[in-house]
Image (cartoon, rainbow, N blue to C red; front, side, top):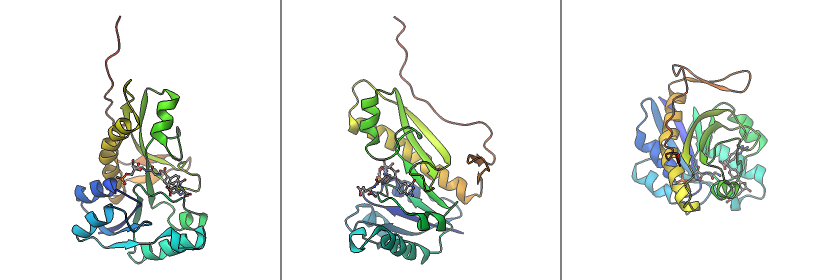
Length: 215
Ligand code: NHR
Ligand code: GAR
């Protein structure tokens, strides 16, 4: 059985999708939040998953917050740590400690739009497709090896909320898939920094694009 610890900061719908997926061979050891009021904590507690809060405001600096978070995580001896809407940038010691076993989901098609407010920035840029990316976490913010991506159209009437909802539905499909692959031991980070998925030959993805105008 592999132990998975999930870090959240808020709603926790990606965490919920992973818990609900019931991944064979995976045990959710704990859900940990940096905010005591994160809505996702109550879902986890109801499901009998251990929860903890490591509040960033209780720590004098980022290094001490990272160290406290690491101690809370390591109490559950994780094989995998999953950032699911986790909103604090993590430092070098933390990232190195979990190298190769730390995943994040980011709400854009990386390397486009790293950082915050991705849906607003995609709308402002006028891009026609947008999406989400699961990647291994490295020191480069939102720059680590890509595991899986999902693509959605940007529609003419979209606002930030409608676009975020379309992306979020795809996040809930691809994050449990990435965790399943990890738990099955099928992910390898190659020497060139790309991720190989054992048993998945060609890329598989679905595109739901609107029909083109034929004049
Ligand atoms: N840490 C490292 N080292 N590398 C990554 O790739 C990380 C990371 C920590 C979090 C998630 C990321 C995202 O998917 C993530 C990836 C927060 C911020 C941010 O600027 C940026 C990217 C991500 C998460 N946070 C502010 C900060 O000062 C706080 C914002 C807030 O609390 O609301 O840490 O987008
Ligand atoms: C998700 O869209 C996730 O990709 C994004 O925040 C949302 C969290 O939703 N993550 C980030 O923006 C990280 N900076 P959730 O709490 O319901 O999973």
